Length: 153
Image 1 (cartoon, one colour):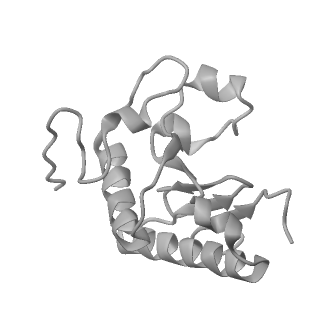
Image 2 (tube, rainbow, N blue to C red):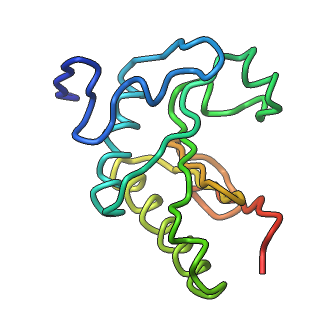
């Protein structure tokens, strides 16, 4: 059973419901799966040990289509978050950037596995995507991973 205390929009120590609202119309989806995702995100934040800026949380079907999101995007279920990469990332060597991203991937998958989920993580030039998807038949086993960076190496 999920035990959570919500006060004035604050869902966890570091996340407020406002961060997950649809950028198009301000709608937000709250259910057990969404709250579970945000709790997992808080555990990730505790490990990450730096502020996390959510650039995209919940998306309505219309907004997701408008911005060219995947037709099966977990954002429409409220169980996906796009997080801005920290400023210091851009000062890292290419090798250190790859280590940083690999650490993110490994930790998110670990947290999802602890929650009995498959998990998904993707990399983009300015942000990374993480989601709390159900286990499935993915290329890499029980999780999904992709790298859509244009500026690789």
